[in-house]
Image (cartoon, rainbow, N blue to C red; front, side, top):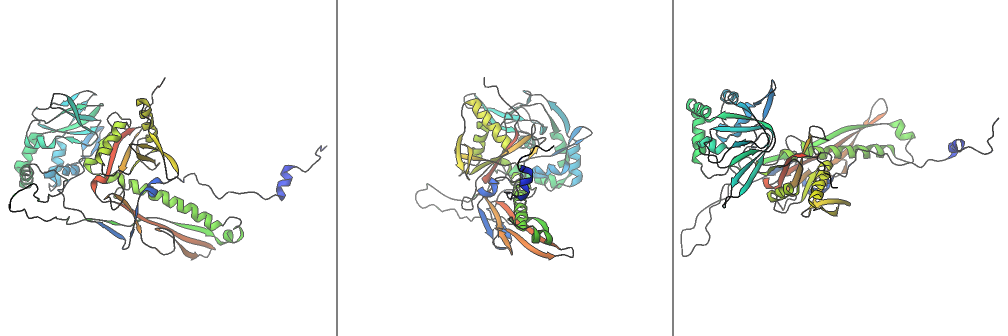
Amino acid sequence: MNDQTSLSPDAARQLATTTKTSPQMRGITPRYLLRALPWVDVESGVFRVNRRRTYVLGDDRISTHTDGGSPRVIPGDLRELPYLREADDALLSELAGAFTEVTFEAGQMLAQDGDAHDQLWVIAQGRAEKRVSGRYGEDAVLEVIGDGQFFDLDAWTRSEPMPYRVRALTPGVALCVERSVLAGLCDRDATVRGAMDAYLAADGIMQGTEVPVDLSAGHVGEPDLPTTFVDYEDTPREYHMTLAQTVLRVHTRVSDLYNGPIDQIRAQSNLTVHALRERQESALLNHPEFGLFNNVAPGQRVQARTGSPTPDDLDELLARVWKQPGYFLAHPKAIAAFGRECTRRGVPPIIDNRFGSPLLTWRGVPLLPSDKVRFSGSAGIGTTEILLMRVGEAEQGVVGLRPAKVEDEVEPGLSMRNMGVDQKGITSYLMTAYFNTAVLVEDALAVLQNVEVANYHDYS
């Protein structure tokens, strides 16, 4: 027997109109990088960065690979040594094969200042610090070095004493080669011998610095003034527009019959645009050619000394990008780890509202979160990086690049072109986002590497 005495809600719903949202998408993020970058409209599709001539500099890393469970130097990467840039492959392979493996423990002294430096050390895995004695005998840290970095090239090449001592901060593995191996190669190869002689003769020239302009200041009387000119790079870097692209397909039956109250083509294109912009931000950070993390100059790389990102580490970044620093950019987990370190020290970061959101700042510089920042290993226990950048063309910083105008543009630099209807009644739209980014001067970027995010503290 049915005891129902009124219309049921389920039956009533058949006559009701549902209130709907527009389609939601979990993958949409604030995309702070795209909002923070000043964008330059490129008329010709190519953006050339003219710079003053500089002395050639590599990336100060010698890469290694694992062979049979042991690390081995990649021969081609030995061209990071200035006098081996023109060496042939056979010679580099011979030198790479002469490296021997050395394991070390945390706290172990790898080299002492003043000792004869007859080995070149390449850190395959681990961290170490360079230390010297100050003017009054105090201990001073010069630099923290990590995977791929080597020491000390100049002392090893010149057979001079070590100018500093090196102590391991973590357990790790290094590869070492004797000075006698290099001497033997020079005796057999005139090209390498000539390049080494030129390196030794260029005493005082810092690799990567700009060629000086001869000037005179503070003089009196009527001395002969120096003559000079400012030389430019012969082959300045050119940035071509790259793109993110897809074909959006919508059946005409769907757009004809189910277009209210929400326009199906508009909803589909809106979500596709978001996906393109997310891919664009990821490429601007991580692309192997133009991604910001892959375009940091050697002298602008800092190793996290204790693993966790500390105020000291971010201060070191600010010392590298001291001319009008604009933004830090980091994974949300790295920002959380930095917040824990600040809480531990009793110096909580100030919160500032930027781009309509409350953001942590350090020394007045906002920390922009982005889930596109890469992790080495898993995101929970791996290591990541924190970027600091100066932005703007007038500031000689980092700028975003986009076309001045494209056909069928729906957003700056993004077009939606109707490709027509096929025999199945499906309309196709070519969705294209054109973009790139340029670093105008090397000191506009710095990065904190090997940042660990899994350290927590007991505050009780």
